[in-house]
Length: 205
Image (cartoon, rainbow, N blue to C red; front, side):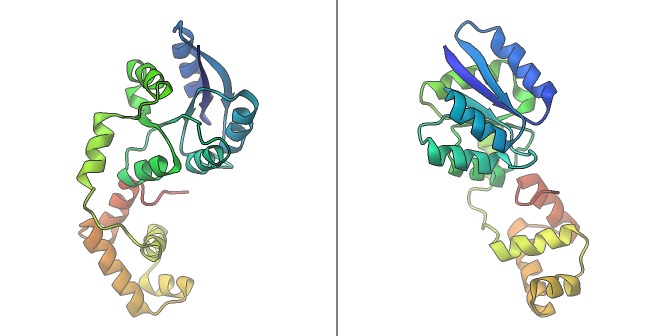
C-alpha cells in the first residue's frame, strides 16, 4: 500500500483527496494536515510514502515545510498540489526537493498516476508546468533587492516611499525599477506587478 499524507488548509480539498485515494486498492490516506507546521508533525509521526503539499498555507508555507521535512527525512517523496503555475514558484518547490508539481485543476486521474510515479522514484510535472518552466528558462532572475522593490510597488508605494523604506536614494530605486521592467519585459509598473504575481516571484501575503 502507498501511504499518503494530504496537506492543505482547505478541508474540502483534503476531503476530495481522501475520497479519490479511498477508491484505490493500492493506496490509503493515513493522515492529514492543515498547515506546514502540522505537516512536519504528521510526517514525523506517520512517515508517509508520498506527501501531497499545498503551497499557500497559514503558519508555515509549503516550500518551508518541504525544506524542513527533506532536511530531516531526505528520502521523503513530496508532490506539490497547488493553484499556482508560476515558473519561479515551481523552481522553488523543486529546489526544496519536491518530486512532483500538480495544479489542483488537473486532479483525479493525474493525481493518482503522479502518486504512483513518485512512489516509484520518478519525478512528475504536468505538460502545462513544464511549458511554463521552458518559456522562462533563459530569463534573467530578479535580484533579492529588485524583488524587495517589486513587493513595495505592489503596496502602491512611490519611488520616494520605496527609497525611504529601503534606505536608498530615489535614483537607485529608479534604476531598480528600470531593471525590473526590462527583466520582466513589462510595459509599466502595474504590468510588472501582474507578471510578478503570475510567475510566483511575489505574492499578496
